[in-house]
Length: 193
Length: 142
Image 1: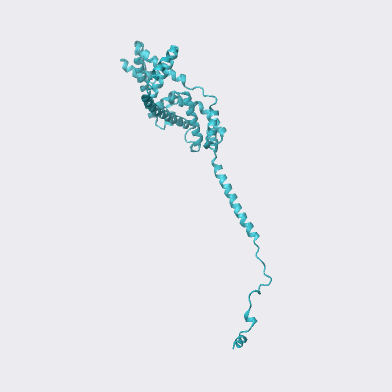
Image 2: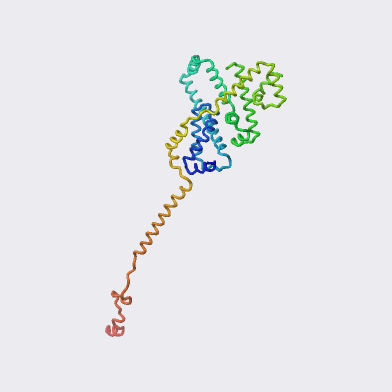
């Protein structure tokens, strides 16, 4: 089944066509979401939301871009919305904790780590450091960097997904790498790993 | 070359995105500076972390869970194709019109007007002129 037939099937509500679409692209969508949200369970939930949106809005797909481009676009938008919503929740939670006296939690987490082998702590710390550094990137830089590094998309493909020029993609990725490097260097100087 | 200048380029050096001249200059500095080499090593490890965590194994029940979510959501249960959304109301409209037309036709066929045996005579009306001439009537009055 080619893309046009798949989309036609989904537009007619055919579950079999939808299943083929999901099985073909689920890895790609989950991976894209994971690059932005850094949590596998959240990435899978978001990927499901992406496919539900595809099923719901298949009638709007005009076929002027590739199906994968459309999927990437929805996946990145959903992932960014998820992060924005989480930030808001965490902000209100931190205010609540401040008034409810929940400041002891951080100390408890660091004490638990002493039970684990050193290499596991280092791996986890390195991952956290990397994710924190990526999370601090501005949204567009983050999306461009994720699509390039997690999905190995070319700059041209990223330009199609983000609906920007090739020059803009080059600039975004250049700045993303620079910002990432600066943050990692700060960590290196403080010997956080 | 100063370390601060090199630090700006290391991530691009890793991806081989510098000019040949610049790549040589950075390599030359790295050969002499342990601190920059250590930072480059850290950068390499961080980028390798991305390679390690990308393309995770997706749950084998991914579509099953998705299907279950769709079955629980009313809007996905009644998913009609565009041609069905037109054909069904059109069919019922045709059926309704056929019913009305059929009823009218049957009603018209059932009404049969009554036949008159003697069309000129209306038994209820009395023809005064033929029953009694006018002159005789006037004479009678006088």
